[in-house]
Image 1 (cartoon, each protein chain N blue to C red):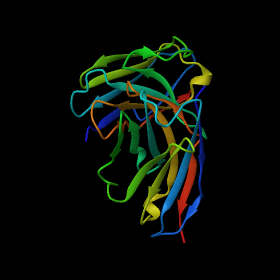
Image 2: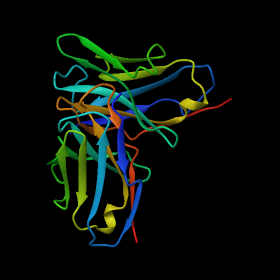
Image 3: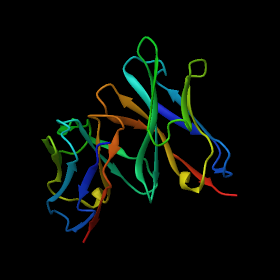
Length: 121
Length: 107
């Protein structure tokens, strides 16, 4: 059974970087039949897809245009996990952040429990 | 980006009632749509994928239909445990996008 374990700080100062990690059990980050996503949720934006990484003979990365240049998703095969880094955060980045496993057929079947990140000084 | 407009934004119904939620896509998405249920304090839970395929273990009172730009989700007989917020999500094109949600309550 695949499970995702999120970790990372719940408070980030404005203009700093947000870093979250999603540990994978029951699967591997280099699986050829999954993609590893970050999604956030806030009252103002609802559910917002941020980006993903996946391995199909090489690593691929996709990002939401609104965050491109400010965020990265990185796999770590040695620890079987993937991470989110979001730079230059502002209070508008305050949200619940989820990692999720996307099936090759496009659905998010497995989700992490979520990390509430507050951007505040 | 493909905009997903979900309606209604909230619905209050009696136990046993039929509840229908609609998701309208800003462009055709074939049947590349998933439906999720979210309860307070929890992550979304996949109920239906590919517009109409019921996820394993999900009660048969939940169903989905449609393709193209208008897709629907139905609870045939509302139960108390169905209270929560329901979301659609398209995967026709990046960026993956979600509807705004429909909050379902018991009257």
